[in-house]
Image (cartoon, rainbow, N blue to C red; front, top):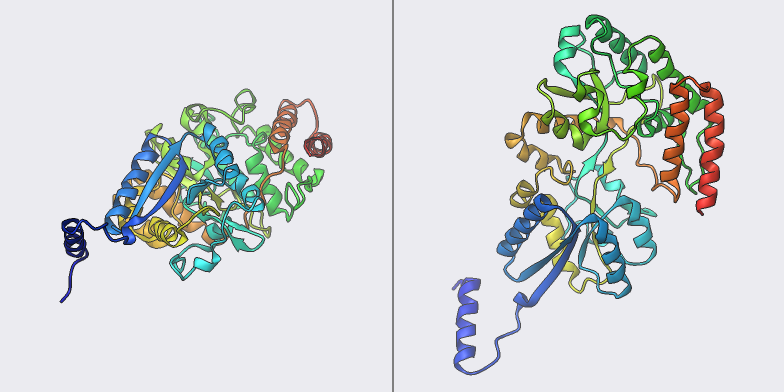
Length: 426
């Protein structure tokens, strides 16, 4: 006779109590901890997923621990030193290699196909969690560079049929000129991306190079950066970019970026910002790839917005892996999580979420699906001092935009300065 687990526990528990005996030690004693950096919305969704997991796996209880980003890594370091890490932790790409080198994370490869189903996982996002060819972190949300454009202006200017997923830099320049002419100069074609290192990095990769090499040295040549700055200078001279006085801040609030302010038809963002951009605009937005170099290498990459990792302190890896697997494959859980942590790497999950997407969320996911086979490998984590290098890039580009120095000369000085910054930081 089949006996339900609830009935079994009720019966055996009742007998034990009646006899004054201890309750039997069963699987309900299993527990795991999940630690993440959060915000109110993320915490709400995560605790709901924990409730779903507890409901579906009554033998296991999950304890959620959350804290803001600012204190997260301090607490993580303390727990790591005390060998008291949660079973599962949220991990960031910039810290992944450090925690693997410290021996704080467990390799996930032994669990693939053995509790962890990655058979329908996109390969690009999976790669981002690998260190020395082994998987240590599971991508739970992805991102990529994007040029967001105003669909209404594209239609009115007659460039709506442009293939913005496969377009080249020359075609981008033509679109900028057409839009500027069609609007009588009221709306320029694009923001000036001279000071935007993230777009320059795509340009560098399209030219077969990388900004940083495997050892963290600056490997890009001055010629490549000079060409990038020259491209934007040519468009600036043609009058099809946002004015220079509004093009010197690479960290503008979203509300002040050209497309949102109504100054331009195209601005650069990360793909998880598409929804936020749309929320600030009346006209519908579309998503375009950063233009390609004709015959060049793929420049964009899929960037993990965050990971989940299994720690070395987990006493019940089997239960932890069950929980991790539910995060990426259980429809009930993935529906709760939605796109809050980025685009899910499982196409079935994206398809299941699709009926409830807002128009902007649909743009975001359609874009993510379209670029899958057009991106290159994820670059290695940035070396110490990379933030200071970015500041130096912005200063050098600013001087170019203001016409104080020629692109070639500025690029040569910048590359030398960048390597000096990295050397000092070591």
